[in-house]
Length: 367
Ligand SMILES: Nc1nc2c(ncn2[C@@H]2O[C@H](COP(=O)(O)OP(=O)(O)O)[C@@H](O)[C@H]2O)c(=O)[nH]1
Ligand SMILES: [Mg+2]
Image 1: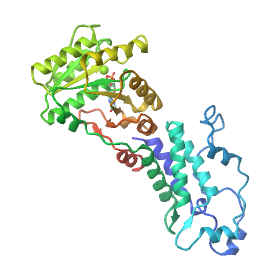
Image 2: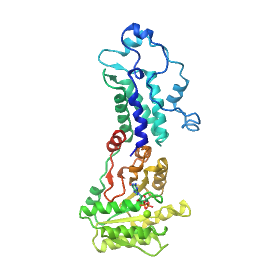
Image 3: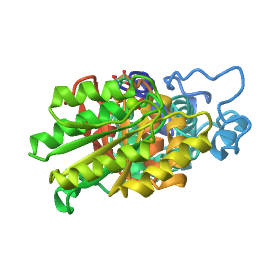
Image 4: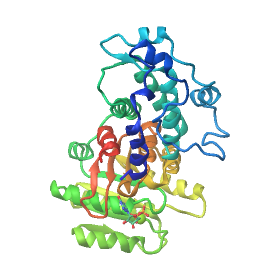
């Protein structure tokens, strides 16, 4: 989970005090020190080709850093201002070097540009306004600022799907949308597994009638989990399948209907029309978008499209276990402004974890 991102972030651990502070200590030492690039700076390779933000809105901080003249020798005044004896302030110039590295890491980890900028701004604010006690390692200081900044940016309301389902009139109808292969069918099976453990009776609706094998795939899960599957023939009307499943649930006093849907049609217009029709006919209590974390920003764009077409109430982000970058999860939390209710973290029925921003940030920094 987030292997690349962790490796990149760990470069900050190699920073020395000289990389954060203006020179302090005895005046002689400070004056004799030559100016120049910080020694232990995080080894983020600067790309020789196009910059990641090329062609997009310019990033103020990065530009400033690039154009910055060689660092002047620290003045006596700086020492007096920045070193109060209780704690020292970080050097603005050195913080900007770090922010440049951080921006590269975030963008290369699939964090969307506006989100990366937000994080960068908050890290900057934190690093420049707080005084740092002597003895704290530079790596810790940056990690703390970065964790807080990410949390600030992605904090969202928590939402309990089980709580929601338990509190509603039955049957509760849940419709799952998302492009092909993101993990809708798997997520439905996992939720049925979860609901069953709470003694909630489920019905599955095989409303992905477009892809060969989709009905069969859901049927295998229904058999494994011992729940009813409502299905029609190949290429039948998905809305009719959803309708029948809801009727079945009403007649048999089942608690939850989970509607699987198709992810790919000849055109997106057809797909979205189909989703609208299923929604109109089955009147879902909730529409849940299932996105694949591995697709990074694409998942955010897809979520926005489905939201525009049918209105998305919540998000499940799958394949976090295989995601080396983590940017998709950060961008999704920030951009879509809907609760991420669960994340898929493996191949088993149990591998559906409740999501929280703290959970995400801890995973990004744990070793
Ligand atoms: N590693 C991993 N694989 C997953 C996860 N969720 C789904 N998958 C796999 O992704 C593939 C597509 O899933 P499926 O449910 O068929 O996607 P659908 O087309 O949206 O219904 C399958 O091979 C699943 O086993 C997850 O959280 N982690
Ligand atoms: Mg499917």
